[in-house]
Length: 434
Image 1 (tube, rainbow, N blue to C red):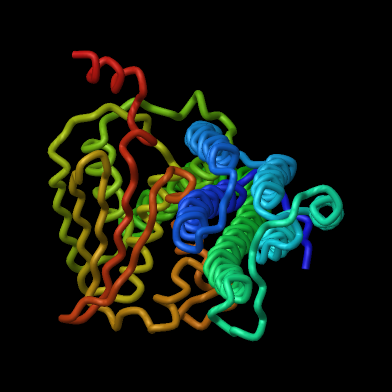
Image 2 (cartoon, rainbow, N blue to C red):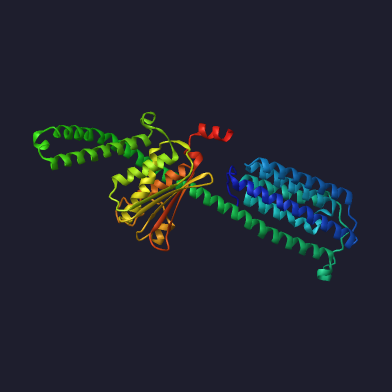
Protein backbone atom coordinates (compact mmCIF):
# COMPACT_ATOMS: atom_id res chain seq x y z
CA UNK A 1 0.00 0.00 0.00
CA UNK A 2 3.04 2.26 0.29
CA UNK A 3 3.50 4.65 -2.56
CA UNK A 4 6.30 6.82 -3.85
CA UNK A 5 5.15 10.41 -3.69
CA UNK A 6 6.60 13.79 -4.48
CA UNK A 7 5.46 16.17 -1.78
CA UNK A 8 6.59 19.34 -3.50
CA UNK A 9 2.95 20.27 -4.04
CA UNK A 10 -0.19 21.09 -2.06
CA UNK A 11 -0.90 17.42 -1.33
CA UNK A 12 2.01 17.06 1.11
CA UNK A 13 0.95 20.19 2.98
CA UNK A 14 -2.66 19.00 3.20
CA UNK A 15 -1.54 15.63 4.55
CA UNK A 16 0.70 17.30 7.13
CA UNK A 17 -2.27 19.39 8.25
CA UNK A 18 -4.25 16.18 8.67
CA UNK A 19 -1.51 14.83 10.96
CA UNK A 20 -1.59 18.05 12.98
CA UNK A 21 -5.34 17.71 13.45
CA UNK A 22 -4.93 14.07 14.44
CA UNK A 23 -2.28 15.05 17.00
CA UNK A 24 -4.60 17.63 18.61
CA UNK A 25 -7.26 14.94 18.87
CA UNK A 26 -4.67 12.65 20.46
CA UNK A 27 -3.82 15.30 23.07
CA UNK A 28 -7.46 15.78 24.03
CA UNK A 29 -8.11 12.03 24.00
CA UNK A 30 -5.14 11.27 26.22
CA UNK A 31 -6.17 13.91 28.75
CA UNK A 32 -9.67 12.41 28.91
CA UNK A 33 -8.34 8.84 29.14
CA UNK A 34 -5.87 9.67 31.90
CA UNK A 35 -8.58 11.45 33.90
CA UNK A 36 -11.04 8.53 33.56
CA UNK A 37 -8.48 5.86 34.45
CA UNK A 38 -6.89 7.77 37.34
CA UNK A 39 -9.99 9.25 38.92
CA UNK A 40 -12.80 7.10 37.56
CA UNK A 41 -11.27 3.62 37.87
CA UNK A 42 -9.02 4.54 40.78
CA UNK A 43 -5.92 3.18 39.01
CA UNK A 44 -2.90 5.20 40.12
CA UNK A 45 -0.91 6.75 37.24
CA UNK A 46 2.27 8.88 37.27
CA UNK A 47 0.37 12.04 36.41
CA UNK A 48 3.33 14.42 36.48
CA UNK A 49 5.36 12.45 33.93
CA UNK A 50 2.37 11.71 31.68
CA UNK A 51 1.22 15.33 31.66
CA UNK A 52 4.80 16.42 30.88
CA UNK A 53 4.75 14.15 27.81
CA UNK A 54 1.41 15.65 26.79
CA UNK A 55 2.77 19.18 27.21
CA UNK A 56 5.72 18.35 24.95
CA UNK A 57 3.38 16.84 22.35
CA UNK A 58 1.14 19.92 22.42
CA UNK A 59 4.15 22.25 22.12
CA UNK A 60 5.51 20.26 19.19
CA UNK A 61 2.14 20.36 17.46
CA UNK A 62 1.78 24.11 17.99
CA UNK A 63 5.26 24.66 16.52
CA UNK A 64 4.36 22.43 13.57
CA UNK A 65 1.20 24.39 12.94
CA UNK A 66 3.12 27.69 12.89
CA UNK A 67 5.83 26.27 10.63
CA UNK A 68 3.45 24.94 8.00
CA UNK A 69 1.63 28.23 7.81
CA UNK A 70 4.87 29.73 6.44
CA UNK A 71 6.50 26.85 4.55
CA UNK A 72 4.38 25.35 1.80
CA UNK A 73 6.43 22.37 0.61
CA UNK A 74 6.40 19.16 2.65
CA UNK A 75 8.91 16.41 1.91
CA UNK A 76 8.66 12.70 2.63
CA UNK A 77 11.38 13.07 5.29
CA UNK A 78 9.40 15.73 7.16
CA UNK A 79 6.29 13.55 7.24
CA UNK A 80 8.47 10.66 8.40
CA UNK A 81 9.89 12.71 11.28
CA UNK A 82 6.39 13.84 12.28
CA UNK A 83 5.21 10.24 12.50
CA UNK A 84 8.34 9.26 14.47
CA UNK A 85 7.52 11.95 17.03
CA UNK A 86 4.02 10.53 17.37
CA UNK A 87 5.45 7.03 17.85
CA UNK A 88 7.91 8.31 20.48
CA UNK A 89 5.19 10.13 22.43
CA UNK A 90 2.89 7.09 22.34
CA UNK A 91 5.74 4.88 23.52
CA UNK A 92 6.51 7.23 26.42
CA UNK A 93 2.87 7.26 27.54
CA UNK A 94 2.60 3.47 27.29
CA UNK A 95 5.85 3.04 29.25
CA UNK A 96 4.40 5.13 32.07
CA UNK A 97 1.09 3.26 32.07
CA UNK A 98 1.68 -0.47 31.87
CA UNK A 99 3.74 -0.96 28.71
CA UNK A 100 2.70 -3.88 26.51
CA UNK A 101 -0.10 -4.75 28.94
CA UNK A 102 -1.84 -1.42 28.23
CA UNK A 103 -4.83 -2.06 25.90
CA UNK A 104 -3.99 1.13 23.95
CA UNK A 105 -0.76 -0.45 22.69
CA UNK A 106 -2.62 -1.28 19.46
CA UNK A 107 -2.54 2.43 18.56
CA UNK A 108 0.84 1.55 17.03
CA UNK A 109 -1.16 0.11 14.13
CA UNK A 110 -2.58 3.57 13.42
CA UNK A 111 0.93 4.96 12.96
CA UNK A 112 1.90 2.05 10.69
CA UNK A 113 -1.15 2.48 8.46
CA UNK A 114 -0.69 6.25 8.22
CA UNK A 115 2.93 5.65 7.23
CA UNK A 116 1.84 3.15 4.57
CA UNK A 117 -0.49 5.73 3.03
CA UNK A 118 1.70 8.83 3.34
CA UNK A 119 5.32 7.72 3.06
CA UNK A 120 7.68 6.15 0.58
CA UNK A 121 8.34 2.41 0.87
CA UNK A 122 11.60 2.66 2.85
CA UNK A 123 10.04 5.08 5.34
CA UNK A 124 7.02 2.83 5.84
CA UNK A 125 9.13 -0.24 6.58
CA UNK A 126 11.25 1.83 8.94
CA UNK A 127 8.10 2.80 10.84
CA UNK A 128 7.13 -0.89 11.00
CA UNK A 129 10.54 -1.79 12.43
CA UNK A 130 10.55 1.05 14.97
CA UNK A 131 7.03 0.34 16.26
CA UNK A 132 7.84 -3.38 16.55
CA UNK A 133 10.99 -2.56 18.50
CA UNK A 134 9.04 -0.20 20.76
CA UNK A 135 6.43 -2.89 21.44
CA UNK A 136 9.16 -5.38 22.34
CA UNK A 137 10.96 -2.83 24.50
CA UNK A 138 7.77 -2.06 26.42
CA UNK A 139 7.28 -5.77 27.08
CA UNK A 140 10.82 -6.05 28.47
CA UNK A 141 11.46 -2.80 30.34
CA UNK A 142 8.17 -1.23 31.43
CA UNK A 143 6.57 -1.92 34.75
CA UNK A 144 3.15 -3.61 34.88
CA UNK A 145 0.02 -1.53 35.36
CA UNK A 146 -2.20 -2.51 38.29
CA UNK A 147 -5.11 -3.12 35.97
CA UNK A 148 -7.60 -5.90 36.78
CA UNK A 149 -8.13 -7.94 33.63
CA UNK A 150 -11.14 -10.01 34.73
CA UNK A 151 -12.11 -11.29 31.29
CA UNK A 152 -15.20 -12.98 32.66
CA UNK A 153 -16.85 -9.63 33.45
CA UNK A 154 -17.08 -8.69 29.76
CA UNK A 155 -17.47 -4.95 29.25
CA UNK A 156 -17.35 -4.41 33.00
CA UNK A 157 -13.67 -5.34 32.90
CA UNK A 158 -11.51 -2.20 32.64
CA UNK A 159 -9.07 -4.06 30.39
CA UNK A 160 -11.76 -5.25 27.96
CA UNK A 161 -13.35 -1.80 28.00
CA UNK A 162 -9.98 -0.23 27.20
CA UNK A 163 -9.48 -2.61 24.28
CA UNK A 164 -12.95 -1.76 22.97
CA UNK A 165 -12.22 1.96 23.20
CA UNK A 166 -8.86 1.44 21.49
CA UNK A 167 -10.51 -0.54 18.69
CA UNK A 168 -13.24 2.06 18.18
CA UNK A 169 -10.69 4.87 18.25
CA UNK A 170 -8.44 3.15 15.71
CA UNK A 171 -11.36 2.38 13.40
CA UNK A 172 -12.90 5.88 13.57
CA UNK A 173 -9.60 7.69 13.05
CA UNK A 174 -8.62 5.44 10.16
CA UNK A 175 -11.95 5.95 8.39
CA UNK A 176 -11.88 9.73 8.84
CA UNK A 177 -8.26 10.44 8.08
CA UNK A 178 -7.66 7.81 5.42
CA UNK A 179 -10.72 9.16 3.60
CA UNK A 180 -9.33 12.70 3.81
CA UNK A 181 -5.85 11.66 2.74
CA UNK A 182 -7.26 9.63 -0.16
CA UNK A 183 -9.26 12.68 -1.22
CA UNK A 184 -6.06 14.75 -1.14
CA UNK A 185 -4.28 12.19 -3.29
CA UNK A 186 -7.16 12.06 -5.77
CA UNK A 187 -7.13 15.85 -5.99
CA UNK A 188 -3.39 15.74 -6.64
CA UNK A 189 -3.86 13.17 -9.39
CA UNK A 190 -6.54 15.37 -10.95
CA UNK A 191 -4.18 18.37 -10.86
CA UNK A 192 -1.42 16.34 -12.49
CA UNK A 193 -3.82 15.13 -15.18
CA UNK A 194 -4.88 18.73 -15.88
CA UNK A 195 -1.23 19.81 -16.10
CA UNK A 196 -0.45 16.97 -18.52
CA UNK A 197 -3.42 17.94 -20.67
CA UNK A 198 -2.37 21.58 -20.65
CA UNK A 199 1.20 20.64 -21.60
CA UNK A 200 -0.13 18.59 -24.52
CA UNK A 201 -2.28 21.51 -25.64
CA UNK A 202 0.63 23.94 -25.42
CA UNK A 203 2.80 21.54 -27.43
CA UNK A 204 0.04 21.45 -30.04
CA UNK A 205 -0.04 25.26 -30.10
CA UNK A 206 3.73 25.41 -30.58
CA UNK A 207 3.50 23.08 -33.57
CA UNK A 208 0.69 25.15 -35.04
CA UNK A 209 2.69 28.34 -34.46
CA UNK A 210 5.73 26.91 -36.23
CA UNK A 211 3.61 25.83 -39.18
CA UNK A 212 1.90 29.22 -39.34
CA UNK A 213 5.21 31.07 -39.14
CA UNK A 214 6.68 28.92 -41.89
CA UNK A 215 3.61 29.43 -44.06
CA UNK A 216 3.81 33.19 -43.50
CA UNK A 217 7.40 33.23 -44.74
CA UNK A 218 6.58 31.05 -47.75
CA UNK A 219 3.56 33.14 -48.76
CA UNK A 220 5.31 36.47 -48.36
CA UNK A 221 7.16 36.28 -51.69
CA UNK A 222 4.14 35.21 -53.84
CA UNK A 223 2.01 37.96 -52.32
CA UNK A 224 4.70 40.56 -52.98
CA UNK A 225 4.88 39.34 -56.59
CA UNK A 226 1.09 39.60 -56.95
CA UNK A 227 1.19 43.12 -55.51
CA UNK A 228 3.80 44.18 -58.07
CA UNK A 229 1.88 42.59 -60.97
CA UNK A 230 -1.37 44.24 -59.93
CA UNK A 231 0.41 47.58 -59.64
CA UNK A 232 1.70 47.17 -63.19
CA UNK A 233 -1.74 46.18 -64.49
CA UNK A 234 -3.25 49.41 -63.13
CA UNK A 235 -1.13 51.36 -65.62
CA UNK A 236 -1.88 49.27 -68.69
CA UNK A 237 -4.17 50.97 -71.25
CA UNK A 238 -6.45 47.94 -71.38
CA UNK A 239 -7.31 48.36 -67.69
CA UNK A 240 -7.23 52.18 -67.41
CA UNK A 241 -9.78 52.44 -70.21
CA UNK A 242 -12.23 50.10 -68.42
CA UNK A 243 -13.45 51.48 -65.04
CA UNK A 244 -15.00 48.12 -64.08
CA UNK A 245 -11.73 46.22 -64.56
CA UNK A 246 -9.85 48.98 -62.76
CA UNK A 247 -12.21 48.66 -59.78
CA UNK A 248 -11.59 44.91 -59.72
CA UNK A 249 -7.83 45.54 -59.75
CA UNK A 250 -8.25 47.87 -56.78
CA UNK A 251 -10.27 45.24 -54.94
CA UNK A 252 -7.63 42.58 -55.67
CA UNK A 253 -4.90 44.88 -54.38
CA UNK A 254 -6.89 45.52 -51.20
CA UNK A 255 -7.29 41.79 -50.63
CA UNK A 256 -3.58 41.19 -51.22
CA UNK A 257 -2.76 43.91 -48.71
CA UNK A 258 -5.12 42.27 -46.22
CA UNK A 259 -3.35 38.93 -46.71
CA UNK A 260 0.03 40.61 -46.20
CA UNK A 261 -1.22 42.33 -43.03
CA UNK A 262 -2.47 38.98 -41.70
CA UNK A 263 0.87 37.33 -42.38
CA UNK A 264 2.67 40.22 -40.68
CA UNK A 265 0.46 39.67 -37.64
CA UNK A 266 1.40 35.96 -37.62
CA UNK A 267 5.09 36.80 -37.70
CA UNK A 268 4.57 39.43 -35.01
CA UNK A 269 2.84 36.91 -32.74
CA UNK A 270 5.67 34.46 -33.38
CA UNK A 271 8.12 37.01 -31.98
CA UNK A 272 9.58 38.35 -35.23
CA UNK A 273 9.83 42.07 -35.92
CA UNK A 274 8.12 42.77 -32.61
CA UNK A 275 9.90 46.03 -32.04
CA UNK A 276 8.95 47.30 -35.52
CA UNK A 277 5.19 46.83 -35.39
CA UNK A 278 4.21 47.14 -31.71
CA UNK A 279 2.49 50.47 -31.20
CA UNK A 280 1.51 52.15 -27.99
CA UNK A 281 -2.20 52.80 -27.74
CA UNK A 282 -4.99 52.65 -25.15
CA UNK A 283 -7.38 49.86 -24.31
CA UNK A 284 -10.41 51.74 -25.63
CA UNK A 285 -8.64 52.77 -28.83
CA UNK A 286 -7.38 49.24 -29.38
CA UNK A 287 -10.89 47.84 -29.01
CA UNK A 288 -12.41 50.52 -31.25
CA UNK A 289 -9.80 49.98 -33.99
CA UNK A 290 -10.14 46.19 -33.82
CA UNK A 291 -13.94 46.37 -34.04
CA UNK A 292 -13.82 48.83 -36.96
CA UNK A 293 -11.25 46.76 -38.86
CA UNK A 294 -13.27 43.60 -38.34
CA UNK A 295 -16.48 45.32 -39.46
CA UNK A 296 -14.87 46.65 -42.63
CA UNK A 297 -13.31 43.35 -43.71
CA UNK A 298 -16.19 40.96 -43.01
CA UNK A 299 -19.53 40.56 -44.82
CA UNK A 300 -21.60 41.22 -41.69
CA UNK A 301 -25.09 42.62 -42.25
CA UNK A 302 -25.62 44.08 -38.76
CA UNK A 303 -22.79 44.57 -36.28
CA UNK A 304 -23.50 46.19 -32.92
CA UNK A 305 -20.49 47.41 -30.98
CA UNK A 306 -20.69 49.02 -27.55
CA UNK A 307 -17.56 50.12 -25.70
CA UNK A 308 -18.46 50.64 -22.05
CA UNK A 309 -14.90 50.17 -20.79
CA UNK A 310 -14.86 53.72 -19.45
CA UNK A 311 -11.09 53.98 -18.81
CA UNK A 312 -8.30 55.24 -21.05
CA UNK A 313 -5.52 52.92 -19.86
CA UNK A 314 -2.32 52.65 -21.94
CA UNK A 315 -1.35 49.37 -23.60
CA UNK A 316 0.72 48.01 -26.49
CA UNK A 317 -1.26 46.87 -29.51
CA UNK A 318 -1.13 43.07 -29.24
CA UNK A 319 -1.70 41.14 -32.46
CA UNK A 320 -2.35 37.90 -30.56
CA UNK A 321 -5.12 39.54 -28.52
CA UNK A 322 -6.48 41.18 -31.66
CA UNK A 323 -6.57 37.87 -33.51
CA UNK A 324 -8.19 36.23 -30.49
CA UNK A 325 -11.06 38.71 -30.50
CA UNK A 326 -11.42 38.42 -34.27
CA UNK A 327 -11.58 34.62 -34.01
CA UNK A 328 -14.50 34.86 -31.60
CA UNK A 329 -16.26 37.36 -33.86
CA UNK A 330 -15.60 35.17 -36.92
CA UNK A 331 -17.16 32.16 -35.21
CA UNK A 332 -20.18 34.26 -34.25
CA UNK A 333 -20.47 35.55 -37.85
CA UNK A 334 -20.39 32.03 -39.29
CA UNK A 335 -23.21 30.99 -36.94
CA UNK A 336 -25.18 34.23 -37.37
CA UNK A 337 -24.47 36.10 -40.67
CA UNK A 338 -27.29 38.60 -40.05
CA UNK A 339 -26.34 39.94 -36.60
CA UNK A 340 -23.31 40.00 -34.28
CA UNK A 341 -22.79 42.08 -31.16
CA UNK A 342 -19.59 42.98 -29.27
CA UNK A 343 -19.67 44.61 -25.85
CA UNK A 344 -16.63 45.73 -23.83
CA UNK A 345 -17.03 46.41 -20.11
CA UNK A 346 -14.80 47.09 -17.10
CA UNK A 347 -15.37 44.79 -14.12
CA UNK A 348 -13.01 45.63 -11.26
CA UNK A 349 -9.49 44.81 -12.40
CA UNK A 350 -10.62 42.89 -15.47
CA UNK A 351 -11.62 43.59 -19.06
CA UNK A 352 -14.75 41.72 -20.11
CA UNK A 353 -15.46 41.21 -23.81
CA UNK A 354 -18.83 39.66 -24.67
CA UNK A 355 -19.66 38.46 -28.19
CA UNK A 356 -23.30 37.58 -28.87
CA UNK A 357 -24.94 36.08 -31.96
CA UNK A 358 -28.41 34.97 -33.07
CA UNK A 359 -27.37 31.57 -34.40
CA UNK A 360 -28.43 28.07 -33.33
CA UNK A 361 -26.17 28.12 -30.26
CA UNK A 362 -23.75 25.50 -28.98
CA UNK A 363 -24.57 21.83 -28.69
CA UNK A 364 -24.49 20.55 -25.07
CA UNK A 365 -21.42 18.44 -25.82
CA UNK A 366 -19.53 21.46 -27.15
CA UNK A 367 -20.35 23.51 -24.06
CA UNK A 368 -19.04 20.72 -21.85
CA UNK A 369 -15.74 20.53 -23.81
CA UNK A 370 -15.55 24.18 -24.90
CA UNK A 371 -12.18 25.11 -26.37
CA UNK A 372 -11.02 21.57 -27.13
CA UNK A 373 -9.25 21.22 -30.51
CA UNK A 374 -11.05 19.68 -33.49
CA UNK A 375 -14.45 20.06 -31.83
CA UNK A 376 -16.77 22.03 -34.10
CA UNK A 377 -20.31 22.15 -35.46
CA UNK A 378 -19.02 22.96 -38.94
CA UNK A 379 -18.13 19.36 -39.76
CA UNK A 380 -14.64 20.19 -41.03
CA UNK A 381 -11.57 18.16 -39.95
CA UNK A 382 -9.77 21.33 -38.89
CA UNK A 383 -12.82 22.80 -37.13
CA UNK A 384 -12.61 24.06 -33.58
CA UNK A 385 -9.03 25.33 -33.80
CA UNK A 386 -10.14 28.98 -33.63
CA UNK A 387 -11.82 28.63 -30.24
CA UNK A 388 -9.01 26.33 -29.08
CA UNK A 389 -6.50 29.14 -29.74
CA UNK A 390 -8.83 31.70 -28.15
CA UNK A 391 -9.00 29.70 -24.90
CA UNK A 392 -5.25 29.17 -24.75
CA UNK A 393 -4.33 32.80 -25.53
CA UNK A 394 -6.73 33.96 -22.81
CA UNK A 395 -5.26 31.43 -20.38
CA UNK A 396 -1.73 32.62 -21.21
CA UNK A 397 -2.81 36.16 -20.29
CA UNK A 398 -4.25 34.91 -17.00
CA UNK A 399 -7.84 35.16 -18.19
CA UNK A 400 -10.60 32.75 -19.09
CA UNK A 401 -13.24 32.15 -21.74
CA UNK A 402 -16.80 31.05 -21.00
CA UNK A 403 -19.70 30.22 -23.29
CA UNK A 404 -23.42 29.76 -22.89
CA UNK A 405 -26.60 29.55 -24.91
CA UNK A 406 -28.97 32.48 -24.47
CA UNK A 407 -32.56 31.69 -23.42
CA UNK A 408 -33.88 33.85 -26.27
CA UNK A 409 -31.68 32.02 -28.81
CA UNK A 410 -28.13 32.33 -30.01
CA UNK A 411 -24.85 31.99 -28.18
CA UNK A 412 -22.74 34.21 -25.96
CA UNK A 413 -18.96 33.94 -25.54
CA UNK A 414 -17.24 36.02 -22.84
CA UNK A 415 -13.50 36.74 -22.60
CA UNK A 416 -12.38 37.88 -19.16
CA UNK A 417 -8.83 39.26 -19.07
CA UNK A 418 -6.93 40.80 -16.12
CA UNK A 419 -5.94 44.38 -16.92
CA UNK A 420 -2.52 43.80 -15.37
CA UNK A 421 -1.63 41.45 -18.25
CA UNK A 422 -2.43 43.90 -21.07
CA UNK A 423 -1.77 47.44 -19.85
CA UNK A 424 1.66 49.10 -19.70
CA UNK A 425 3.28 48.42 -16.33
CA UNK A 426 5.12 51.74 -16.14
CA UNK A 427 1.94 53.72 -16.51
CA UNK A 428 0.10 51.43 -14.15
CA UNK A 429 2.75 51.93 -11.46
CA UNK A 430 2.59 55.71 -11.85
CA UNK A 431 -1.19 55.57 -11.56
CA UNK A 432 -0.95 53.56 -8.38
CA UNK A 433 1.50 55.99 -6.87
CA UNK A 434 -0.60 59.05 -7.59
